[in-house]
Image 1 (cartoon, rainbow, N blue to C red):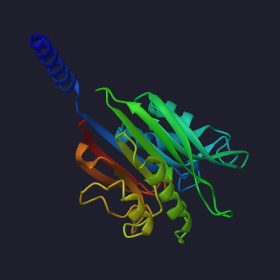
Image 2: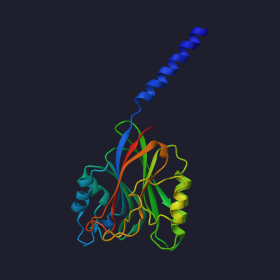
Image 3: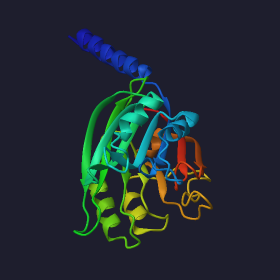
Image 4: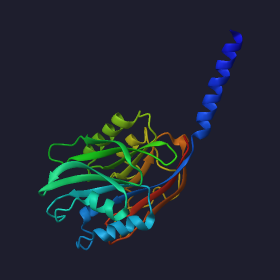
Length: 262
């Protein structure tokens, strides 16, 4: 009996060791990109230019803000699908509101297939624009499940809506079991109440560029576009970059290269 118990213990130990040895780290390149509903700063609606920016930096995951879906101003294009085709990435869209004959909201592009998604409607005052968080999950090439959340919080100077939205994100995702990246145009500066609330569960990378200005694209002087993550002991920041390309968008593009170790 003791011999059988010992054999079972050794088998269990070997199984755990084997499982752990197969868990591999992933290096992920993540982008936040406010695409100005496809218009560009010259209002010439150049989807090839937007896709060219993404292709140039070769991200694995992209959070897109100010995304139109078949609106009149976007020439009835489905922008997430169009950009997905041009970048050879999978795309998902989350409606924040109906607008101009179509819809307006957030989108995510991914080099990995999606295994789950949710459109998380965020609270707002009655006269404010609706906002959303697009919650996606992907399985990486090394078998890790990563939760990637793209969002665009309220733009008003008064923080009332943003505070409600930050609290909603923390309530819905703060205790998730999944390693999570929270990415997007948060319209919140570093010392704001909004960032303080999100920082209860998500942190910014400890990198010298993490608080650089991201808006406006010409002469950026405020940091409102962010990449944050939970489970900080599992993430290593290799780089954090802010690129200010002032044709494709009025926001700078934020890119982080991160290593996730399960």
